[in-house]
Length: 328
Ligand SMILES: NCc1[nH]cc(CCC(=O)O)c1CC(=O)O
Ligand SMILES: [Mg+2]
Image (cartoon, rainbow, N blue to C red; front, side, top):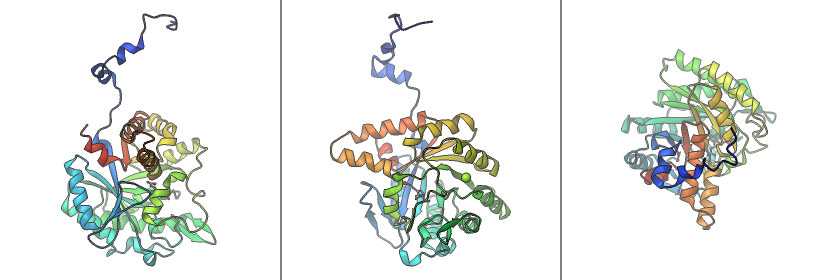
């Protein structure tokens, strides 16, 4: 049939009023789809602004607990906590990451103790603890894969022991999901989930996050482990492996320049797909909105909806609280 010169078919009828538009609406975002990333620092009484991320702070554990409480009241119940470590606690082997007394692990424990009902996610990667600022062990300027797995394994066990619900390996070493899964199971952590950063691209959009954690690489870049943004087929290989290795969720990161990858994984894999709407994507909107160049709230709604429309069930986003405050 050819509708092109047939005015009996008028698509505008389905857009004629707010009510009709909401009947027709295919995609909606719920606060239940959202995970709020939070930045943790050591000490007490701290709430320090991240300059490159307007509205986002680094919290000490006490202020973070109050922030979580206020988010819970708004309906947000999933949180991903990232630690910012001072330079003097970093070393080449990220030893601090599995020190049971370290402030990150203590904070995770404290959060689950105060709010057992939250879904708590942690980040498994060496960069916040590494004096090289890389996600792996560095030798002669190279990031070693298999040697790194051992560190990721120790870190994962320590985080699982602290009560984390979902581990988020964000490092992109080969084989780490299977390695971590085996180790967790051997130690009785069969209920601890893994949300794999399956297709994580070497992206310019992580800039503000690295400011927040002071975790930028000290030399080179992350292109030997994070993916090339020119490629999509590799994402299928990574997803196959993560499926096989026991991941519970597949994540695509960043989100906005990668909606095609989200769609690709969502069309081809039965696991829930998550997308990380990263720091740079947040800050771009905030910066333009501050200058009055666009309407920040409308941009946020359009962005979150498009990420869901492309096939993500879950969105990690710094917008989570602002979205929840709209009470939609
Ligand atoms: N491996 C650490 C990690 N986990 C999440 C992000 C980025 C998140 C964001 O930009 O919001 C990064 C940064 C990186 O890989 O350099
Ligand atoms: Mg992989």
